Image (tube, rainbow, N blue to C red):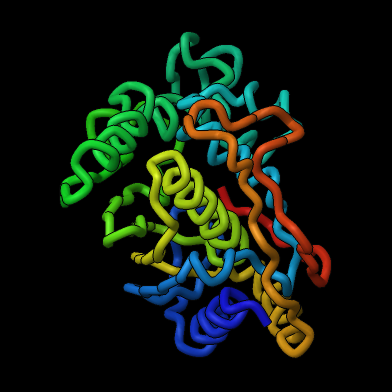
Length: 281
């Protein structure tokens, strides 16, 4: 069994057994626990679930959309066959959920995620700091910018991360305010593990640990059956696959972000198949 499967299923079991039943803005009640912390040694294992299929290529392209392309344009994702942000896309008239964001934001998610990365040049700054001032303890990427929250269609869930150099390894600390454990969390963990590997390579470090902090970890009521199906697969979980990153690429902005994702691949990814679960908007 992969270590991520074990940690993930333990978290799901805890939420089902101890989670507080509560209402929220989506209208679909959740069971949730607060203040969870998980650690991953990325030098030992690449974290992706095997007890259900995780769309690694789509997850990685979404990550590159945010941090490499620094884009809020949903069409960029559509060109790569990805529709996961359609629920939050502003329409051609500049409207989303009855709110007018302005026609200049049509086809985007407004001033969220990649928009913030681009506006403040966050990724380029972070990489420059790792290279030039590796002992810096202020190397933080913060997507939760209050002046831009109301003009984005969704406040960032994984809203902040910090880079820390530990001798010859690069660590990443990730902060998630709200965690849809069945749907978002498996994507997010694999995404930031990829990001850590890419940034370590282009800055000349080995990849180190990923520390993950969650505010609200929740399972929606209509996802429980799917999670129980996944929990029943625990005994059949597979070993973790390996991550391959093209060793020739030394510039973060040169990694291929086409639909083929030529420079970033999983090797020997075995899984137990898809489990469909609804998303609450």
